[in-house]
Image 1 (cartoon, one colour):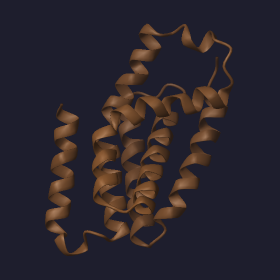
Image 2 (cartoon, rainbow, N blue to C red):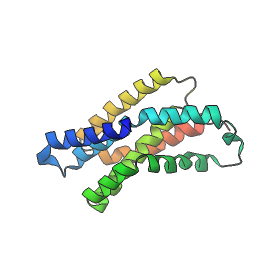
Image 3 (cartoon, rainbow, N blue to C red):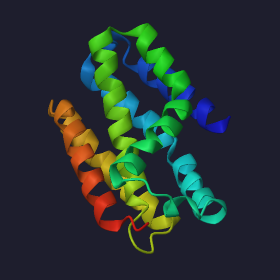
Image 4 (cartoon, rainbow, N blue to C red):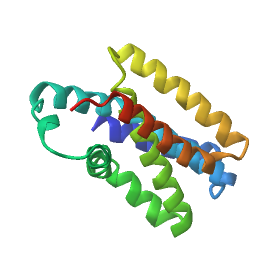
Length: 164
């Protein structure tokens, strides 16, 4: 509930402050990155829950790519209210890019959790650094370049550090 309230406050606040730029893709990508960062605690808690109570899951004979993309269903449900808002408010192509950016960023954050010995403090520092990097890329008009970069980096980190 707190995460959804924080998302709503971020969306309303940013769009209220920048009312004249409501259809600018850079602003919408910044809002989307704020929404994703607002959900990082839930991503971390999901990883802790999976490690603690579902530790048998890596023993199933699933390919790494299937395990990697299986997290998308969880994050689809997690971001469903925000995605509904995005798809009802903006055009299909803009909404598709924003959803792809959100999922690529979440998959990258989830892959960061697989690094050896990462704790919540290190994870939050990494997320903050990536958020600043996203900000710089978005402000220079390279927001759409972030999507494939996030996916490639997330896959490389996941592939290297995932041990079934």
